[in-house]
Image 1: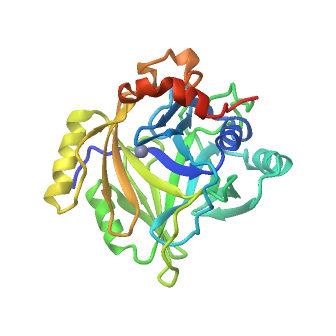
Image 2: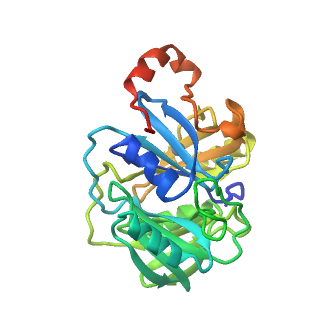
Length: 310
Ligand code: ZN
């Protein structure tokens, strides 16, 4: 077992329309856009990052908006629900707000002793807000949502699996332990985690594999403090038999990826260097930022990529 992982780092999903996506996260949910860049592997597509003031690990929702992409078909082998933490007593506010703004799929429920509000994103993305008592993380409040209500970061992700055996073994190896099992859902946690340290495993033996598309989670990334710890994790995973990519420079963090037995793509990402490496914290997410290898495309991309606002 390894102890370098402290919870989620980011969740990356796909969307159909960049402007709709930007509006939903910055306006409807009140998160801060902390980076406007491109998909490093397909630079004609945006890569948009939303989170708290600095884009702290455990708060970062990221999107690749692929114009005209068809919606995915939910199923097993994917993250089915991405869950954010909100303050205790704030789910009524959110239910009203999301309803007024035309958000679909709003459903309040109580699970694991927590008040929870499920809802759908613009592409049918599975989301929920869960009331958490005393989440110490500071929210971004300049998105128009007060501190009493604002999102603190991720609470968890829920993975839908045909069988949770191999995935829960992997998560145990990664430092998670089973906290509770309820109604066919196994909740796993990292003691001393970063606030975004819960994972729910939903077993659905008779549901077919998901077909990825807009509204689907592409991968889920786990946080390690620095590159040295990432190398340790990579070695431990490879010694256990996982096929892990080399370390890849994503400008704002370093990344390694591997496919898990349940079908979900995992990433391990470093907390360093962070989103202020190429712009001031006061202006995060405002200018189009390109990695060195795509700088020569700036003129073309500025014409091709549609404005997010206005
Ligand atoms: Zn990633």
